Amino acid sequence: MSEPHRKAPARRLPPLLRAGLLTTTAAAVLVAGTPMAASAAVRADRPRSAPAVTVHTTSAISTASPIRTRDFQVAFDVRQFGDLVGAGADNRAIASSRFCDGSLHCSSVALSFQIVTMGGDHRHLHTDNVSRATNNHCTGCQTLAGAYQFVLDTPEPIALGPETLRRLGEVEAALRAARNQSPQTLRATVDGLVSQVVTILGDAAAAHAAAPVRTAVAVPARTGVTLNRTLDGWPAGS
Image 1: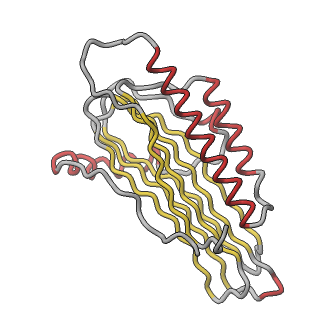
Image 2: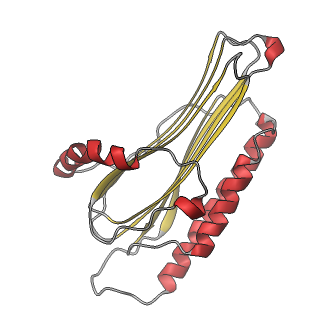
Image 3: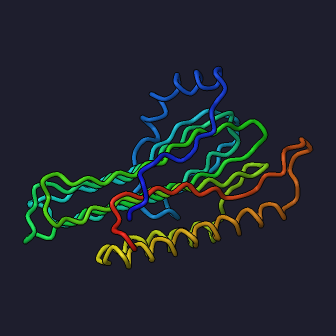
């Protein structure tokens, strides 16, 4: 039985901050609303140096049809928000298969990994993590969507080092290389890569915590990786 489509719980913003987010959404989407397809080690953002409000969207969209019978799309996005007043992070995996008959063996897979780091003592994060797989007049089609959202929250802003970004780049490469796997094998592969990302971010947080303190301002002791995961369309037992 496939896991139900659902949104991950969201941390709600205060009314004033929510209003601030809405007024900045249009500008932020123009800059940061495009899914990343290149290596995480090359395209990862550097953390912001001053408090700000930002909104970012990551999405993987896959469509199979008689014109393109197999479509495998991966989004792998690293966003280092730094010290923020507030942020919105939206992660989406959307897969659809349409108008295929059984002889075409159409397959559509969308996998979206969104990695967010943030720190400081005045942060509010609103997250959405959505997966959706749909078949439209498609006989015998395989349509799979998986959205994985990782949030690393540290007392002070963290900058992921070259070694951390290299390891994340290896995870991205392994994820893209899994394009020809069966649904059962793919699910096991992705679950293993998800565990690797959690470990990599945990190692980065531990190294960051061991570094000398750079500020005298007291902040809550909260260092950890939160994983939001939603799946849709996966066969029972995968």
